[in-house]
Length: 73
Image (cartoon, rainbow, N blue to C red; front, side, top):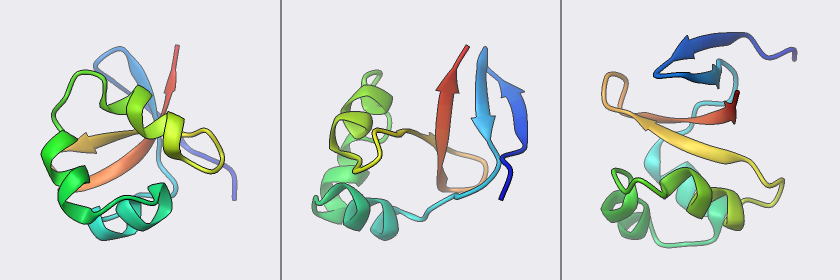
């Protein structure tokens, strides 16, 4: 799959691979409640990137209630 990028808040959000909270928690190897508590932290993308097996940073979307991989410009 080729990612489809859209611009949002000065970041490029990749349109493939959105995950719900439990899926992201499993991917990061943490409890679902940890993801829930940290989702609005300003360092969430960096924190998730440090735990992701592929080094992908994630961002939470309040609109869709899902997590998306993020690529900084």
